[in-house]
Length: 144
Image 1 (tube, rainbow, N blue to C red):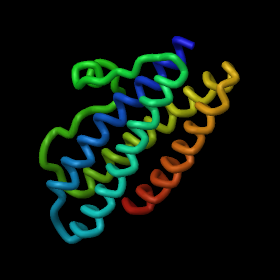
Image 2 (cartoon, rainbow, N blue to C red):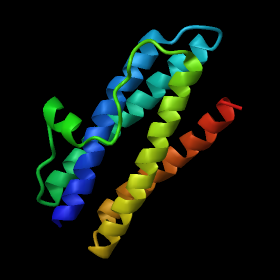
Image 3 (cartoon, one colour):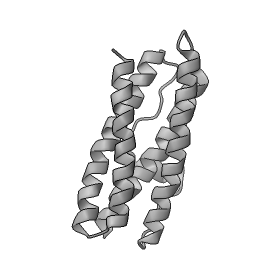
Image 4 (cartoon, rainbow, N blue to C red):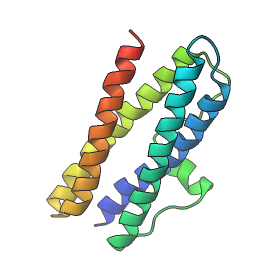
C-alpha cells in the first residue's frame, strides 16, 4: 500500500505545482490568442484544483497521509515551476509536456492500484487519464 500512497502523493504534488503554473500562464499570456488561452488556462486550473482535492482525499480514504505543504510538494513533484514570462506557444508546450508526464505517471499508478485490487482508486486514475489524454490531443493540434 505504501507504493500506492507514494504515487498518489506525487500526483497531489504535481497538481499543486501545475495549478500554480496554470495560474501564472493565465495571468501572463499575451498576444493574438489571449482570449482563447486565458480561458483555456482557467478551465485547466479549475479541473486540476478538483483533481488535487480528489487525490488527496482518496489517499486519506485508503489510510495514507497526503502531502500538504509547499516544501513537500516541491520535494516530490515531477514538474518544473513556471520560469517567467513566456511566449504563448511556449506556455502551451509546457502544459502539454506536463500533461504527458502526468499521464505516464497515472498509468504507473493505475497498474499499482489494480495489482492491489483497489478499483476505486483505479477508476479515479482512469477518469483523470482519459481527461488528460484528450487535453494532450487538443494541445498537440493547437501547436500545429
